[in-house]
Image 1: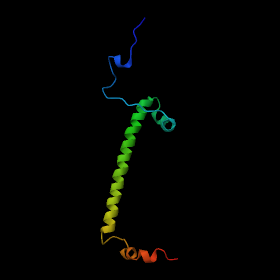
Image 2: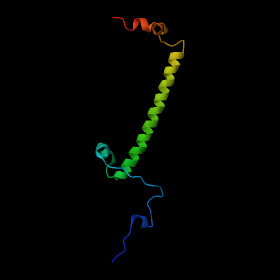
Image 3: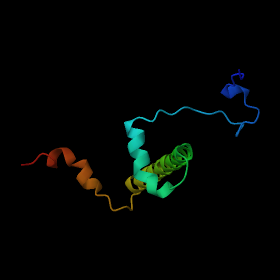
Image 4: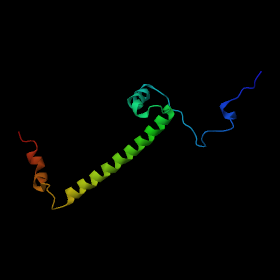
Length: 99
């Protein structure tokens, strides 16, 4: 009888980094199907990794853009030389609900 070998008894691990488990639910399957042609021949674990990295980069870029737009709005709204109609803002309560 051959001795049983478990995953933890493997001598050479392919990476020193810890692994995470990701459940391949319907949403993940749909997402993978949407990009399958872009990752032809690439193992699904690698696709999930690459998508996670791209997603994190996209979220960071979105946040940077949001901050940039807020700063531009603050600059526009506080600059007395901007095109904002301050008189209209002062009278908004009187003019907003006219019928």
